Length: 120
Image (tube, rainbow, N blue to C red; front, side, top):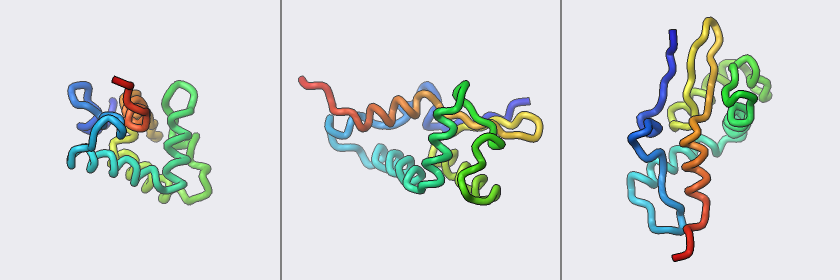
């Protein structure tokens, strides 16, 4: 049984983020969404967890494989929850373990956001 949870911001029919910062000013909604993502990544432990999931073989990681970030297990769970709430991770429970993945749309949108707009 799958308990995968995907943020509404990441569903295929919805743009996951924003245009490049240099293209035009962000709308209030785009700025809110983007700030939530960056705020979640502003914590070093969360950034390490996000990186561990994003770079893990197969594109997903069991919590058991990424928990060694120098904090207790309850703290790891808290940080993973914050990353999910920000729309950066999705998860699926398999037996007693939870597997996390970074949605490809999230990485693409974050990369696009920080890329210079194409010259006209």
